[in-house]
Length: 570
Image 1 (cartoon, one colour):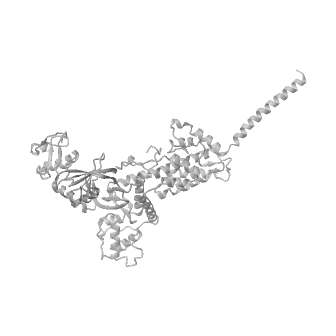
Image 2 (image 1 turned 45 degrees about the vertical axis):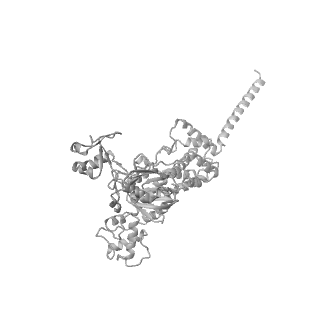
Image 3 (image 1 turned 180 degrees about the vertical axis):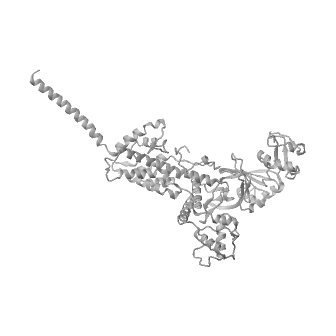
């Protein structure tokens, strides 16, 4: 090969090498000059590519609660980041962080929403030695996913509550509505208004808003040291003097039951202090006698922190409910032993009730009242017959006659009625008790003269009662689950209002006839059987009640635990 051929070959080799080097440099240049959000997009696409396998999404070593929803959310965005742009972290990310920091105002712990990890990542990404173009992409992706998961989790809790009531066996069976949060966040990002989106999902009831405002006062009470504990001692009443009276004076001033402008001798139990005690007793469901006895002293010594936590628990219960019950409904608060009829958003009828015993608790549920029964028969539930009536019958068989109870040989449809005297009751026990017991209508019937039916799986209903003395008790959990009401005739008159065939006098006439009649309600009413131990009434007064079924403790404990790993599997 001559010299010219060799030179030509070297030139060709050099040209080819330069070409490949230029192509390689071009690809490298493209990679290093991709925008920040493009790099995050690629990383997100790779990170969430396994979504069809439904594997958990993990950030900073923890499984995210939105593992099922994050792939769908980013898939709809073609995996473009929501909180990162070419300039770095977006203003909407900081807006979300501010909202999460304020979660405590809703009675929710901000730490549940990755606030610690988010703030640590923000600190690293914004470090002076890092520029936006060389901040680790891994940190950007971690921040992106944590922020999205925080939004979905926080919004879910605002919408439907932080705890699933069915998981803690609270006997709360009202189903909570759930929103699809993906389109809400997509819309908020498009409009650049994250706060608006959170306000939209947090459109709570007036009851919730009033309780939220009250929570801030009790939080301050607690942070400022609360109120003094009043030592045990004899009852305190008007006319008494001493150091314990002075402590009582201070205690009631701190909680707002006694005006701080009262400058009279704090060691004297006078008229003004008595009125303050009456106010305190009223808003704690106590007997209003103006005397500080054992029960009142106990409630006075419940700490401010405990009251704050009690409010937090009940704010959670309110989040479980629909925001609006409608203009007309019947509401029973089990813990308050009260029933209210609400019509056109105003309470028009109130009465005391008797609810289930500790071991036969009245559940929380809702229904629709459709009819009532005048002069009802009472088919006694087997468990009640075995546990309550059988011991009485064994002691004195005449109780069957006195209570006008009929005995049937079995629970079959056409079972034969039998003579109570034909049964050897001493040999009957819970294992062989096969009889059906039915009490006839009349003044001694356990259901009274009227029962109100709203069909439900618990077979719970409202009814009259011959045991009228129980309504004067402070604590009224004596029933077997059903709800005894103080004013059955007034409730029946309201429900049948507008029906010319059923006046109050007609109801009284039918009751006196002892004949059983079923009467349909032409305008059925929604029934809400609920359980609240703290609320703010229409006059703005904070109310507290005893946790008669010990449900607050379970819920308070659940609120302190880590949220479930999937927000859509509640």
